[in-house]
Image (cartoon, rainbow, N blue to C red; front, side):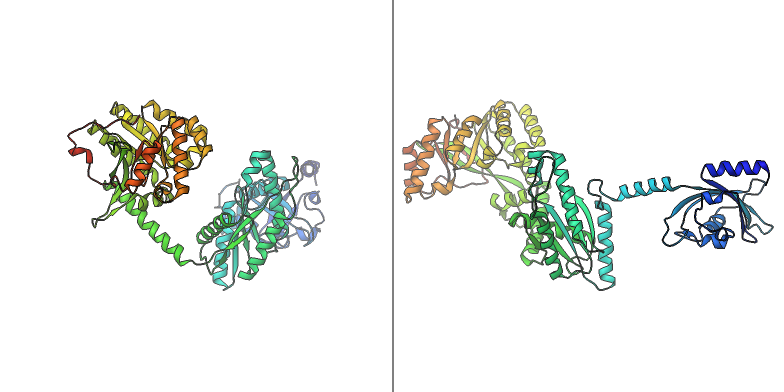
Length: 564
């Protein structure tokens, strides 16, 4: 070897590299000196030919020959460049050394690779970085478990395996109960420590083939392979105990938490990943509502499925009715208790159907609230009520809005636009909200009341009957009217308890300068009692039920006394 060649070999060795010439025709490989720096503990005979060297390569022994075959030949002195990466293992017990090989090959007379030369170098750090990036793309950074995307992919594979091999598995969703309380009490860093600890406890109780991943913020997904329904029940209790039996140590002190679990058997009750997730979510939610810290397995439920079909049908009917302008109003009179003169009308929503039937508010509102359609209904009701007020200058109307609508920015944008388009209408509008909304978040509701009062509108609390505490809140809110729940009013002529309760409410309201409306008034005896006690207004069967006809239209535009 010349001095220059020796110097080049020494430089390459210092860089963790070695040069080679591979005579592909004979399969012989010649290496530069100090090749042992790259391939430690590998005998020279294992490096002497392409075939012997290939035995050391993983994951695919033919990676070098395939790389030459895949790159199209470039004719000329420079040859055809190529670059590949592979692992080399000296023995089955030895660690893998990752190699980057860069070189050129030269074609023989037949155009096929006949000779190659190049340089190999150790590339363990880069491979480690690639593995780390790959792991970060597939695993949750907090817990180190699979992220949601890869958990769902593993679930889809597990479902397919159960169907192909006629086996049984299970999918569990484990939700940490009341984690928001930990956030509020100690901060998000402590909540993260709780999540990480719970993941570790679950991991310690898994079998080798089971799969764990973080499904969402406080939920873990768990795939139990070769697991019967009975096995699922036993495993779920094991995981519940792992969470609840010991407090979680954090830097802010010990935290006690529980978990709830919803599970579904595969493929018996879920034949796809989406179906498994939906049913596990459903049972987890049911479990939390029923009793937090417990386990519930999904089972077929005829009533639930029937109700869902009804929900789908009703959803379509409500949306269609909105689009076809078949959401209409009925008007129930509210009169002055002492004189029985008309005071205002409560607007109640109705839905006209194609067969001529009409659905009442109790048939529409609860379903619309449950299915997330109530805000669309409330928007339509607002338009209809304001249109009536704009058309008839001598009437006052009240409308009910759902709890969600009180904080809906789109509803506020609509009412502001309508008030600007119809000046003075706001002063004849009464907005009714339920008592539960009024006391749920006092600051938010106070802002709601203030904004409505800026339009000149008044606020009524519907279905009132919660006692002294709520009266104190209503005073702070500046509520104008309290509508006493008809459940207390309808029997006052026969029930001493109801009489005492209603009379007390009326007295308290009068002292706080809040007007009262008694709902569900059934007879003259009840009306007389209410008037004697100082109730301001009454409504119900005695006065007249809601009608789609406009009672004021034939009243010769007679003005009604304003609710003050």
